[in-house]
Amino acid sequence: MSPAPNPAVGSQRKSAIQQLSERMAPERDRWLARNAYYYEEETRYLRFLVPEGRTVLEIGCGTGALLAALRPARGVGIDFSPRMIALAREQHPGLHFIVGDAEDAETLSAAGGPFDFVILQDTFGLLDDCQVFLERLMSVLHSRSRIVIAHHGHLWEPFLRLGEALALKMPQRGASWLSQRDVENLLSLARYDTVQTARRQLLPRRAFGAGNLINRYVGTLPVVEHLALRSYVIARPPPGPAAPEPSASVIIPCRNERGNIEPILQRLPRYPARLEIIFVEGHSSDGTFEEIERVIAAHPERRARVLRQPGIGKADAVRTGMAEATGDIVMILDADMTVAPEDMPKVFDAIASGQADFVNGTRFVYPMADDAMRLLNLIGNRAFSLLFSWLLNRRLTDTLCGTKGLRRTDWQAIDADRGWLRIDDPFGDFDLILGAARRLLKTIEVPLRYAGRSYGETQISRFRHGWYLWRMAFVAYRRFKAF
Image (tube, rainbow, N blue to C red; front, side, top):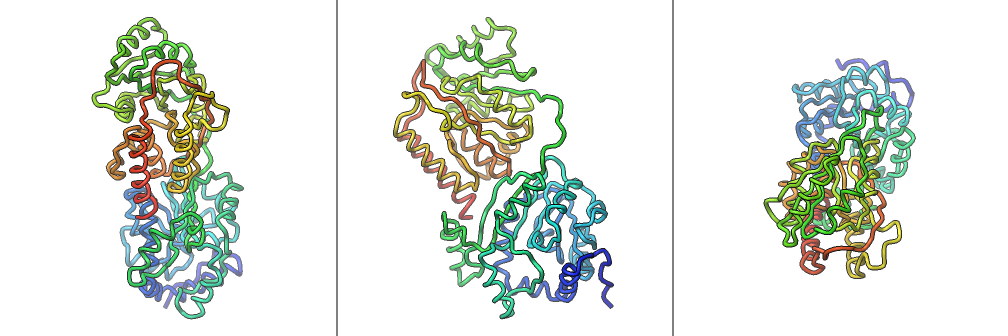
């Protein structure tokens, strides 16, 4: 005899959904097997978004197959079908499952928390009031939590209804067919920030191997990807109460920049109160290291020090400085003085306020000096910004701006994950941009003033380094799109 339906389910619509779930519970695994390719692709992408070993709450967990596949350190599933939960507990005894309505505050409270990730797979459109649910969900989140909402693209509604009629798809009743913009709007109303969006699965069938080829190399193309079956929205809760002002480190890679050292130290604002300045010198031939030592000695009131990088290239200099930084927030300022040091507090404030997890400077908002960027560099920068915006599903207008900022703990996580990217980035910019996308960090671009050089020559070779950029674009394509 099956358990009685959960009395907490209030609305008539929801009662009908629950009754269907009860009937489908014994057949759910058969439906998963029948559409194995679709569910395997879904699980593979969600595993890409959710690293193993995190705390995960799944709303509408069914029999728990997805939750188990994510391999959480602590996994909790909520479903209002007692028969689904009974099967989930039997099949996955290491996870915790709750019978209840996730829109009910008491049910959410019983889940515990806080959770690193909350997953709603085809559940968001079944809620009676999405906005109220999202507001209540904050009780089980922390400031760094991420919500992943997976749903069907609304253009597929007639095809999916036909699939149900032909017994090709698991039956579903009462769902709201929401577009990606609908979901983002509901998140915004509940004060969440959308971190990024994605679309996957143009062909939800294996089709003798054609499904993989189409989904990876055709379905991810610009414009075409908007026709995909699956839509994903990743969001974060609003920032918590203001914390005490964090400390900061400004890392300044410099090679053959002797004439810029003292102006940097003089112009860099003394903000925040706990600010350290780390010059990382890169085997200069013009006496830059000695000049840094002289300037530091001449300005003992500034908390500044100098490191000599062990390797070569800006990326090595950045990693050297990051490893020695002690600030809660770390920022990068190029020593060529093309970006005004006075703008660094803007980078700090965007992170300290909770508006951003990762700041990328952009030089393409304010007018730049006539001699600041050569035409070929300008065209290339614009092109690569468009390319990486598509690759990473987030807006980037200036991928090569050297000014960046993030929390030191986030940099440590990105640096530990560099082996996954398998990328040799001589600039250091793409280590951070790709790493921030991989870690689902909220990215904001801060407009910066851009001037021409007053001392020294650029370290960038348009053609030799242009080849590196294409290599990094290909790596990003394989890691974030066609994987």
